[in-house]
Length: 460
Image (tube, rainbow, N blue to C red; front, top):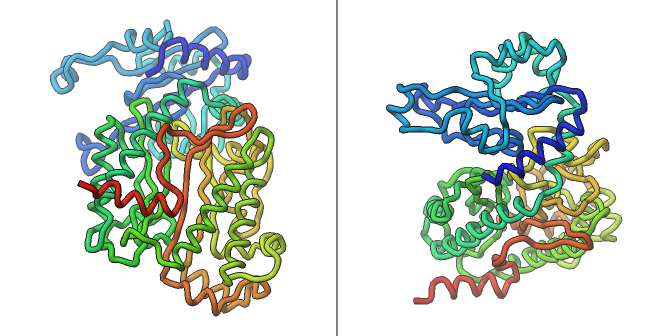
């Protein structure tokens, strides 16, 4: 947790934005895995963490014009038998600078006593829908449709700009990521399983007192964008794509992707595609500055992808025209990046306002999957993660439809089938006059450095 003054100031800013409105910021409850007392690892609601800090189930923060209240359960002797002594609700409130508490069994009556609308964020878990319905005396359908746009915008506008204490936490997570990738490289070899690499990365995260910030991708099938199977066995000639992150005890995330040649050396075809992805990454990173839009960065990276594939003979024509037609999206079908912070896809539970403001998403294939398009501001933290993928089903579909034939040489593309996917991802902070790659130690990206990593970690 941060010092109490951090949470006090955040809540003061929230009250200023809300005016006379009353807001209920709900925490999460435990979720049973296969019976009530065997639960999944608890993860607190990120907006509750932002304003109240505590990673304890069943808690609520109530923001009113007259001040804040913390609600939760008081521990009983039965609780203490199983968990040991725990802070009281009053002590938990004091730790975050809240002076007023409401026991959970009194919360519904307390909320109704205001006789006014209670603002809440859109729930994305079913148990939260029913919990809010019970507290507010509404039906589940009314809860789903009745969340507060005013509160959502206020929370997003505050959380978008990261404070210095948040940057420190993200860099702690990145320190864990650096060790995770160093450890992974020790196990990348012919005949080794994907799950062996994943286990090494998880162990490295735990050694930093971190958890994983999301389910990691460790795969020789890099063309499957979110491949959470670890059943593959590496063979020389494969590329291993690793997309993973760590999460600190305060809830802040890192998110890094690298692609490694299992043999320790890229083939000629792999090197051409890898360098194209790296050039796209460099182009986007070089352009980061306040007031440029993420959409502009995405299109610039897409231009580099198209230019590199034209040089490799897989695409043809003019790169700018190809991007305008969306031809690059057969190879690069996702967006360039996303916001990061207390969520690895920060505030994605709060919808498109996070990444788009009041703008609308494009309907074009590829651009439609851009999670973020808004103007950058100092203090934003986001990812830049271009990639190139050879997805058989997508290639077959486009080829059969004759899609973008003026820009794609399908016969040449066929020779690259089976290469898989390559992605490079880092976490970027927008500064007053540019951008900074976060993390004190950069995980290798250049071909010579990636290949050299294998020599470094395997040397006795």
